[in-house]
Length: 363
Image (spheres, helix red, strand yellow):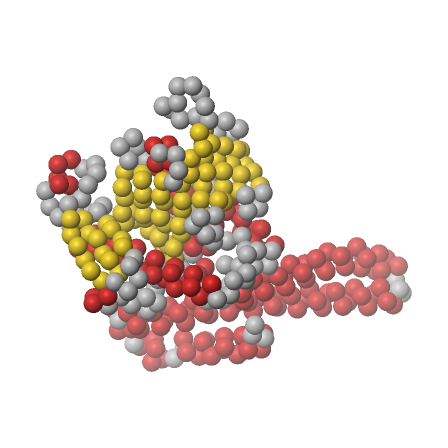
């Protein structure tokens, strides 16, 4: 990890670049060009990140100074009133020191991580449980949609396969605006529901599942897909939408020839938009594949992390008879399922974030 002197030096260099008259005069041209715009945005983001680290370091330095002052008072034992105050204040200051040191460590560990992604692609698929699993997938989609609204996140559906009974066999959507990955990364994994289905006459409790994948949307420079690396097929969309869906081949299927990955999109009424949606899904999956392969080289490194769960890992149970949601990673439960499924997800996300920070790890 870089020393604070290096961080301050880099910060000064960024300030010089941003104050360069040439950069300012070329701003309109740079902003209109993708490369120039990304360069300027990168400088401002880096400046903001370094400012956070420097502010925390200055706060830590002040705390350490106070600790030394209190220790000196305790050693001198000259003024009993001051000694008493120092004895009372020192444990609090030492605790503050540890908290700040951990916060700085986490900041530096998060540097360049996916936290900074401005968009994520979320895939929800019905698992075991038949129709009930599809309904549960719909419930999860509603929860994330309501939560997105409460957080002023922009949502766009990229692909969906509605179930006849309601809910979804699969739905893929994008969320953007702000550090959305840092909010949604904890949702990846298998979600399990325990409840009595409406179609169950005997009143038996059924257990069903749905899987959620949270994929950071790649920056333009991260994943490059060459036209010769993909095969594009067009076909007629299926599902709700009246007779229109069967009249034109608006649905798109893209096969990535090098990896064998196949993605589809049929939500829009024109081929071009569906193609763009499918490419966005493909790029996110290619990035996930690349990151997974890198992680395989360092097995065990992430085993204690709370964050981004694997697709097959059971992370949470929604128990309707007991009105309880339990997150198995941190062994914590919450009541009022209906409120949470209506978007009150902040309590769970904050608890997971707190557990991750306490563990001293960052995804």
